[in-house]
Length: 348
Length: 135
Image 1: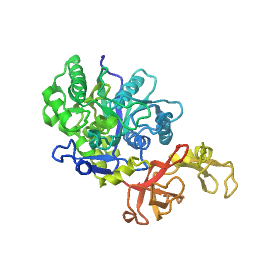
Image 2: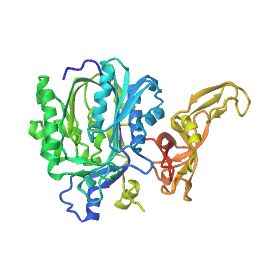
Image 3: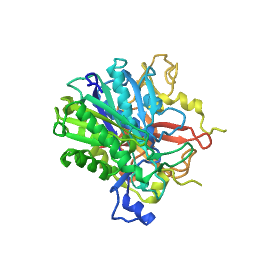
Image 4: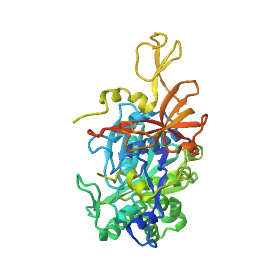
């Protein structure tokens, strides 16, 4: 795919709800072995939160960091697989909450956990083509796992937003390259009217996550003449902590370049928000001139990759909104019963 | 299909519910949360659209234990009276904290949350709430 010279990240924001449930608490309820848990704990949305409210929070932080007026925004695309409405767009509600004018293009996007970076593809293209000056790409989910399913240990809630605009040294980062890699892979799905997704255990790793993640990351590096040593931070999608670290090992990436982006151990797999929250965490510490490779993964299946060059504006902008660590500190631990209530799993 | 929430009135109120935008009287300073042609205090027609600040001061609060419509599953919840720096007082729910975390005079910030869900039609009402600032 051709080099981008026409768009950058003007502002970024992530949002993590304050409730946490430990994986060991879920294991206690279902009699699972506590020695082999995929994460430590996960973030759980409150009863008054959903994909729309969390998207609005993350987007508000992105706007604060960008320092622009919401009326300048011409696109808002939300990637999610947990829309509050099956039929009624989430983006229009978030746009009105933020004060974005009606002269805006908006759609909710679906591609499992990579729907957020799909929004980034679309919005950066709209900016790059000159159709709009600024646009919001959001990934948000209140992910659901069937009680006593392996996914229940990791399926979490969170959101992240990137405000995309023209390239500038005053940006948070500029987009240098993008890449996308998709195939028909039946690793995870949910049919209409079903409450919980289904996954094919043996497809989850090699033919799904690793094939697409590694292909996308390898291709974007190779196509553009980069090697691992040219990249300072690698941000991967994180269905658990083990998968992104294994992908890094296969690609020969030092752990010091991938661990700063790991969020799954503390907040779980926030699906469409996951890799973008990892990116937010890295942007909280990155320095101008450093390069970041972002690779998402979505079941079904596919990966998007972006190479970002951190710009001078990061220094001034990052403290204009709460950082990842500040949001993480608002931690309130809940037990399994409150978790069931919060996530609307009690049906009578 | 029945609606317990009045959709037209909620839709008309969204400017205030979503963004705390209302109409300020240029003559006497009265703030109106809904669209008006005439100031309810001085009868002036000089009303301008204004957005209230996102940071407010808590005047006082109470904890609601008796379910109100559309909040049956979210008990107890906190309702507070807050004041903007220029003296506009508004009521709203306070979220992301326990009652013991609150004290009159403390700073709060606005957030956006579900206000309620209609029982039959399942339409969701979104709007402002207040919460302690994130540090």
